[in-house]
Image (cartoon, rainbow, N blue to C red; front, side, top):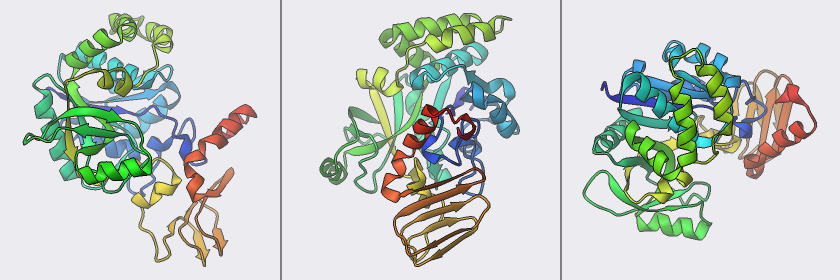
Length: 354
């Protein structure tokens, strides 16, 4: 579809996948599945519903060169937009919407993260097509994931059940405690918030202008320099001063006319090492093993070797990750806190490990 554009948000640091993930090679630039680099998988999924020539990637300056090389066979170099500073998703999406509007005119944007795993690409494409049809009417549309268990680590979206595929959103809910998550699952009126959005460029820009005027003013300054010799200078001068706010908090939670399209396509955000089982099968003892690994009497653990042998005996519920310059060992229940190691390394000035 000529007026449908893909936008892959790929600027994150992926710190919860340290030590494999680093500033210049974060999670989205890794091949965690053993099949393809995650950002390329995201691009290929979008290419089911739009042309490769209509796909853009928004990344950061540290990753831009590597991103251009890795995605070069799929995404045009001029479509890889580089953020001089991380300013959250509202700025990222607004920047892409401004650029696409300037270069191509108004169109429907499909905005997705770069680092989620999706098992059923065909069902995913069908859900996107439904969302695109709803967005053509001028609505803001988000993709919801039909929950399969009472997750406490995801945000939820409550919707009004109608016969339409795109359903009115009643409420965005933060990550709930277990009892609430069980209630949401039983009700059948909630979906997980996937962080995927579909809307016309003109519509989201108008919402930013209305609800985040300071952000819109900065984006206008950047857009005024598009195609001029000053473009890079203005971008680097203005972008770091943009307000840092998520599109969920800054726009969606302050807007009444949001639609959600529930989908079932085997989604997992693979947010930390304990989730690696979404990409690799477990053995009979519940272990996920990648690389040169030798577990003996080991249970419910993640063992990831990038080269050297990992041998483990008589342990349970561990994450062990080996890279050429670092080894991570933590309880599986602490995998979400690996970012604390990265923060500690920053404090100690150990830049070579970041």
